[in-house]
Amino acid sequence: MNKRLIIAIDGPSGAGKSTLSKALAKKLDYLNIDTGAMYRSVALLAGQQQIDPQDETALKRLCSDMSIEFVREATSERVIVNGIDVSAAIRTPAVSLLTAQVAACPAVREAMMMLQRKMGEGGGVVLEGRDIGTVVFPYADIKFFLSATAAERGLRRYEELKEKGIDIDLQQTIAEVEARDAVDTARTHAPLKQADDALVVDSTHLSIEDVLEKMLLVVKNKQAELVG
Ligand code: DC
Image (cartoon, rainbow, N blue to C red; front, side):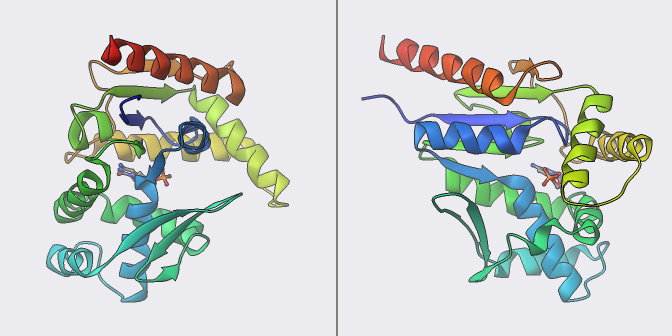
């Protein structure tokens, strides 16, 4: 029987991480852990409870009191926090903004890291984030670092929002992508960083199907290596 692996997928926003980790987890019948959704959930609750994002003590308490669960349904994945489905609520622009702030808090990162390790330690998981291969699971069986140029990632985001009927400016969207990268990379605690032993996959000129195929091949080879 194939060993159930720990697979890390890191990279900047808009590189296709969430689509690919979901697709990969589904193909392998693994649990997909969207760690960005976990930080977003902390931000959602902090906003609801009017906690100052600089108040580390209050954020620490909030994290120790909360439960987060990922549930895969036939066509979607739900994020359940304290028993409530927050899948849509954590995706608003206001929550995105607050998330970047709470994700910089060391106590929040520590709490989320412990939760992620607990969820993933048994294997059979794909974890998607920024610091999985470097901090959370430095001994992951496979580490992917998914990248694409800021212009391409901005364009993808622009098209996604246009499709939803949201009127936005392409140049502004690209600038926002670059600004988020700068915050994620510059943060002192667990910044977005490529692990030395990560496999870099540049998706700029590739379709989702092409990238997924590349990833599945890496998984297959790893499993063969572990059996052999
Ligand atoms: O991947 P995302 O857009 O849902 O991430 C939301 C925010 O959380 C983003 O500001 C980066 C941050 N994040 C993080 O700091 N560490 C992670 N492992 C995942 C996300």
